[in-house]
Every structure is written in C-alpha cells, then in structure tokens.
Length: 197
Ligand SMILES: [Ca+2]
Ligand SMILES: [Ca+2]
Image (cartoon, rainbow, N blue to C red; front, side, top):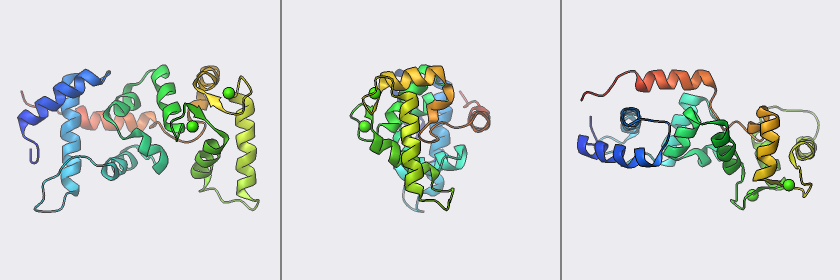
C-alpha cells in the first residue's frame, strides 16, 4: 500500500459505505485499493497520487469496461455511479442513464441533446449520405417512440415508461452501462482477494 495509509482507507470505507448501496464494506475497501493501485500506476515518479481525477477515472472505465464515449463517461465519474453500474436495479439504471443523457441538467432530454449524443456515439460508422440528416431522422424516430406526452422532449416519466416497455432503450443515446462480461471480469479481479484483517 503506497499513497494511502490504512487509516485513511478505513475512513473512506466508512464514508462511502454510508453513501453507496450494493457494496459491503469489504468490497468498498477492495475497490478503493484497486483504484489506489490504478492511480498509483499513473502518477509521476516522486509525486504522490492525489486521488482519482476525471481523466484517470475515464481511462479506467475505458480500459476495464470498454467504454469510449467521453461525454457519457463524464457523467459516470462518481463512486455511487460505480455502484449502479455494477449492481444497480433497473430503476436505478433508468435514473442513472437519464441523468447521464440530460447533458445540461434541466431534467429533460432535448432534441439537441439526443442529436449530440447520437452523433457522438455513431461517429465511427461512416456513411455516404449526410450523417447529420441520418441522425436527425434517428432523433425523430426515437422521439416518436419515447416522447409519450408529445412535447418534443423526454421527461424522466417519458424515459422511464419507454425503457420499462423496451429495456434496450435504456442505452438509446449511447453506451453508458458496461456489459455483463466486463462486470464479471472486473468483480472477479477486484473482489478476488479479501483485504487482510
Ligand atoms: Ca437537458
Ligand atoms: Ca415529453
């Protein structure tokens, strides 16, 4: 154990376990140690790791869960996000994804946000047609499917209702949840060794 001493980890475990469901204290300790190792790896020699900054957390999400979307990863950068990612119920995942997709935090997913998110997640598929036109069409198709009260934007109620009818719509605007294989691999890796008591 390098940058963080045991007492600090215990304090962190206590604090985090009050905020986060789905992980017990032992598992939280494993996660902190894992992150500490990952952060330590990247730190400049001679300088202590000061914690997990966004860039570092993003590259962890990218390397471990294969997530590539910067915009979406920004929304994941919290430990309670981690809890929902790995163990969340459908209701928690719906709240989480809605929050991630609502880029400006006004509690609606607007046409502009859908366009932005879809453009961002589809960019790796080149097409001969004007890609913006295709994305605009996709926004309209998605709205038709999900905008239950027809006001041209998705409220949480619209989103929740649509996802409960069709679970695949949870990630309609981009990949913001890791796949089960990545989760299993990650959990096996992190929770494999119980910390010494
Ligand atoms: Ca919004
Ligand atoms: Ca609506």
